[in-house]
Length: 160
Image 1 (cartoon, rainbow, N blue to C red):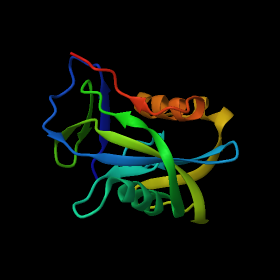
Image 2 (spheres, rainbow, N blue to C red):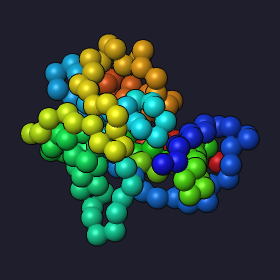
Image 3 (spheres, one colour):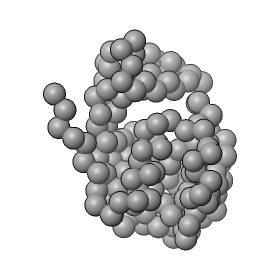
Image 4 (cartoon, rainbow, N blue to C red):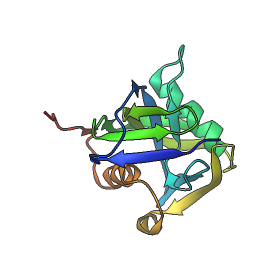
């Protein structure tokens, strides 16, 4: 398995060679947030992944959450649209360098149990106050912070 390396506003980052829509889910149960510890970089994040042909992007969020966490969800809203061209992700297994393009939905749990997968070495309901102490990519921190503090969806600013 390769690794995932995120670059943010880094002049030495490799140039993007793809854009692939992705979807993730911010799932909250009381004060706890459903998070995974990724197997490809060891960072904590919300569940999510790439959009597959033949499915809606909202279905992607539901499917990826189930695959990565074992938890079934129902979507309840939108956290935001994250498409910063200065954030690229290098997948070392195939040398793909993907420009960020992620829609984060709000969801609520409706079944299942937290269960690790090939993409998640840990799955936990994490108390919101513990999140700042977790190792995570700045993009995840930004998305979770927005979800916890804002009711309106995030829309990337128009950048030159």
